[in-house]
Length: 295
Image 1 (tube, helix red, strand yellow):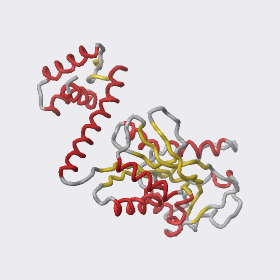
Image 2 (cartoon, rainbow, N blue to C red):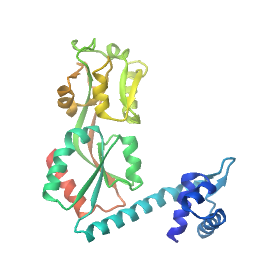
Image 3 (cartoon, rainbow, N blue to C red):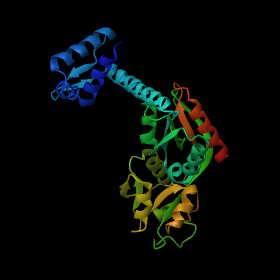
Image 4 (tube, rainbow, N blue to C red):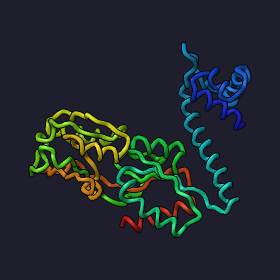
């Protein structure tokens, strides 16, 4: 199968329009349509269906899009590594990191790794499970360091490294800050801050309240940045949940832990990677240091 055909397919899938895809690729619409027809003939399936606004993927097209994106990313990664080798470098490790890893665990580990491996670059992307797992599966990331309480799937391998207990934090001026032995009902009525797209975290909080006969809390403020979340807590009577290993950072910013009378949830956390992608020697070295530093 020609890479040109896959490139044409991905452009149409991304734009949901033959016209827009042709413009993006700088080819004529008839030429692009011919490429798609040739690809469909090669595969023996229909990849797109016409809609009132353009085209949409069939179930066959969705499967091909998933795997073609991985192939495209791996090809780009291979070209990048070849360029690195030409220049005396040994490639780049693309790491996705949840909040606790991003601000509390990975910085000293990355510093040690690069002291010992100065010819390897690191690309670090912050996020949450619901954004990082898709990036891992699509081949945009080599490994992710996250809480491992997401469903097991055959294409992802997991290595637990630590246990993470989630706690509640707030500004010292919060009405609950000086109280002890707080019940779920006591914290339920206050506004909450959450990380946007953290659906796993939202579900855990909702489940916690549901077990006590309470509705999900009012999420009054969402942000994509853990630093924005911590700063936002200082300007209102919000409540937020963070891993316990982030308490030193929260305390340094003037925030306090709310003394709940029970644990919200505890989960293993660690590193995950695609089972179909053999980790490079550099990635294996990084994972060894990661394991040593967290044990």
